[in-house]
Image 1: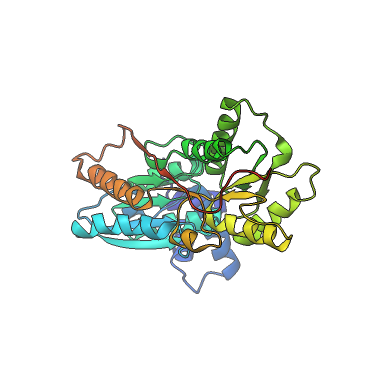
Image 2: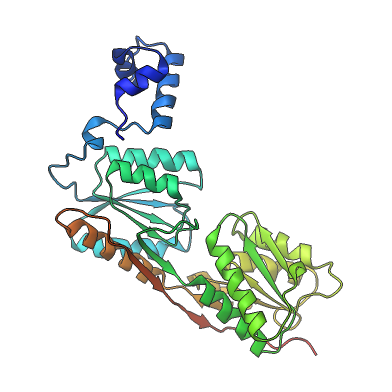
Length: 339
């Protein structure tokens, strides 16, 4: 149901005109009252009437793109794929970063809607049922890339992270490793759990026991977080001889931590990453990783959005879900375990 100024006025206990003036920043309204009304409007899901009614007489030819961080190495090629497809069709991009802040994401969605973007592509952040409800109220078609929430979405492009995690672990098992650790990223929800699931599946298929003490997680995907997670495993009575890391940047931390502890990679411990970012081949030693088709994730999402926008009635009822698979890239950071 569309929220009106009258609805806000009723909850706030003020007049309709006071709500209107507060939302338009009228200096005659006390700042505390303005702040309270704007907070209520946000909580109730109010959007300006011209947007909420969905009366878009013309296309803006602008698409919103929401990412977690603009400086994320993984997203550069994803964004390039999106831009290449949309630029050819005459679209511009409205790019914003959420920094994984739910309130910031909500404000960005609202701003994009008020600017009348034709659609929104959300990259590698967590979009749950509340986000989808809000976007649905705005009437904005949405395509998700690598959604980190467990929520099923009707229009999404993702990478098969279970298969990626399984392939990396199988590679280590084939080299002869049986004590393999997994270093995850505690804030990525579904993605780190899928990669962990692939790791578990590979162990099970090889007849190896899953040991919880070989699993650690960092609060983010940085090299520092990976190094700190690795140090938690070093004091163990039976040290792992190999480890799968959530991403390439995170893998650089354990390599450094192992070398600082006087150990050699891969002689004493093999290390793998995930994503195959350009920097991974220049690590010392060059990093074995799993190539995620980043550019293709972007092009597939952009083409899916164009298909949504081309529908005459803009019906979002029919689902379209695409899952891509990458490939193993073997480099010098993995080798058979020490004798």
